Amino acid sequence: MAEPRAAVSQPPPARALTTAPADGGRPAPADGYAITALHGRFPDADGLDAFWHTALLGGRDAGQRTSVAGEKTPVAGEGHPDDGDVRRTGRFLRGVDAFDAVFFGLTPQDAASMDPQERILLEVLWQTLETAGCTGARLDTLTAADGEPRSVGVYVAHAPVGHASTAAGSRPVPSAGCCAGAGLPARLSTLLDLRGPGHCVGGGEASFLVALHQALSALRAEECGAALVGAVDLRLDPSRRHAGGGEGVGAVLLRPLAAAQAAGDTVHAVVRATAVAHPGRRAPAAAADRLARRTLAAAGVTAAGVALRETEATAAATTGDTGAATGPAALVRAVLQLRHGTLLPAPGDSSAVPWARPHDESGRELPRRATVAVRPTAGTAAAHVLLEEPPRRGPGSIPAGRSTGPATASEEEELVLLSAPTPEHLAATARLFADRALPVYGAHSGVQGSVPDDRQELAALARELRLGRAVRDCRLAVVVRDTMELAAALRAFADDRDSAGAGGPGEGVRHADLRGAQGPGVLSGDLPETRAYLAALWRGRRLDALARLWLAGVDVTAADAAGAAPVLPLPTSALLRGPLREDGRPSTDEPTPS
Image 1 (cartoon, rainbow, N blue to C red):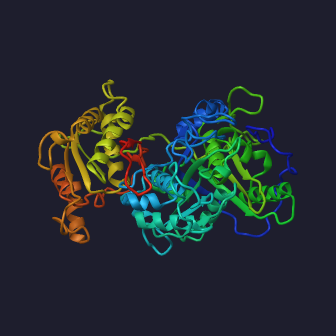
Image 2: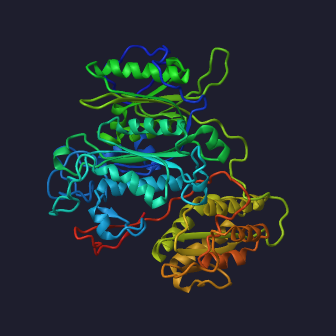
Image 3: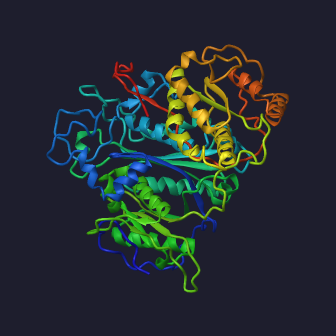
């Protein structure tokens, strides 16, 4: 088999990888740990689809909107302190001064006092959880060894924080010291009522992989049922900008593979083994070689079984030198190549190539594998991660909400519930679903013999919204028969929400704003009798009664008693980002839905 392929030129290679025994340490379980969600923002790539497009082009389109050495570019890096005032170098994220404080339950003053890196990482961590379907009732199923629900660890890596401003001419945000970002795990854990461990890793190109290694240790010890791992690096300080520099933010959600498969999670890749160490006085190449041997030995894999190697250099080909965000950039590149079965352009190549599936000597098919490795720099650790493509799913990849046999009139209908923190967020999310999600799931509508498929897709969509999304104060309910009807209803609501029904029975979308509600509501959700009553309503398909209770403030989602269901990938909730002024008041600019 050919040597592992790298997308850019590499430093001189270390010694050939071997399967020599690792020095101590418990090996990971044979089935490994699943990456059940990943999300990120990188230069000219707000999301994984855009990232893949940029990577396929070998980073050649990155110069269209990002600045290069000696050029003044008024588009890239919007929101940086010196935007439009000085010549900048590197590849920057756009709109880093914009934030949706209301969505996260923060006042504008609190949001303005946060470091911009904390704000953008908070967004991406939330979107990662939403992508995994783990901000609602399903979150309670993530338990630690003692049975505590909502046991999700939070591990983050970041560049220096608290030393840069976010608006031209504003004073620097006061520094909280070298551990100024240490409050982010606690902040997110408090916001979502997450009850797992957490840790913040300082800067360095390998810091994300170090945080991932720590998260796997917590999962192995059963201290949490899942772990969020994220990293961010914004070059807000002009002294940190240089030719080839970049910015980025990314996150993943990890679970033991067996648990993820049992729960029906989407598995993007499997982490088979990791290794982390400081080099001491040894040469970086020797330290990297040692970690490679340890990782392969822990997974029981030979070097010949790994066809791809992603490093800090390959990541820089797509994103520039992204500092603490190097790890997520390299890992995302590896995961997307595993997903698409395609190897990104190598040095001197003009296009990507298909990734042939490997086989052993007997002809048995083997999984594709990749390593993500970051060498140590001055004062930082080295890290090595072995990834494997996920096990293949069987037939019937669309999660079923119900069987698709003959249906009665009531069984042909589905109750779809949405919620958001404000009416504006609710309308923006409704439009997002109507424009992006439903055309995909309703693609077979109108095709002969496809009605059962559409009904199944609608049931799966309604179920995912109940199990996977957080319950907020501004709510929407609609009973529909197919995805096309749902898309039309949501789009009509987004266009003119004031004309939609306000709680009573009737056609179309009904909605309610419960932000000013007082008292315990019409039912106490903590009583077992309440849960039994709501479960009976779901079993009896009393959709109108459930809709009225939902709009009256009752959380009817947690009582859906039909059991676990596979996760259905859906768009994340709409964020209404707007620039923050120094005094904490929002800018007069209109917020931009995202």
